[in-house]
Image (cartoon, rainbow, N blue to C red):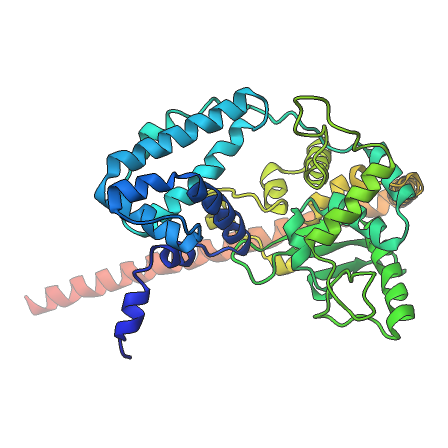
Length: 431
């Protein structure tokens, strides 16, 4: 191992230190965009007056270096810059142009830049400026009726899969950038029908987790495999994208951006994206997050275990994750998910099939119990005799054990008395 001088010098670059501190791809994108927007807001004259440097070059790498140098030389002025930035954000909140819950997301990248370069800032005093967060967001989940309309308005099977997987799995929009066919593991009954499927979200990332899919969604995926074969001439391979882009002749992933565009077309077609009213910056239902809220709502209505539900949404469950003993490869949470399948199923036809299946299972259980009752009724005397005989045999065996144990104890006592008597006789003979 060798430490090289050029590597040591490169490691001192403030912007590179910031990038190195970001492990997650999606955090990387969000943090870099938010930091770049902030750095461009800092007046160039501050760098000229404090550092004697020309900051007309708006390159993020250069601005980050200047900002860190300024923070080291004059922490007070950097604190004032941050305070003014927060106050400007608060004005946007008061005008209804920004959610108060968003302000911390704009500050975290700045903190990451300074922390990664060992610069201390009085963050507590800045946090105190934050406006009170909304206890609950004003947007709502999609309704089942709206999801049914989306399915009806979907021009092809690709859109149907998007709607069904989103609502059945409850994952985030960025997850579409990861899915391959090996991330789906189908559960089938003996007759070949689908019971559901397990879906791995964010494969290869530290934040990866398992969620599940409904039988309805599984059937659509199976149909999509047949469409894939008719277009490509073969079934998809395990490592190929789960959903491929439609407009390309070759196999290319339909990524999160493409998914968002297709969803936008669908919700617009059913009238869920009318022009925003003056002063409004959000629709009643978020385009992608509305599915996640629907998933969460249905899981709660189904009385799914809270920790299981949180884990199936990729939420942190604190220390519970360190103490749990679930075997993910055995999909022990699937029975909890099955409680929610009737709630998560979209089409009325599939819901009726579920009801019929449930009624048939109830009928089978009742018939089985009736057969058991008839058997016990017909063989009651025989069963009683067998039980009495079994009890009598065990009682006799226990008595024999007690008798043997008592005999053994008596024998030990007699042996001890004989030994003591012989010892006494030996002492008398000796005297």
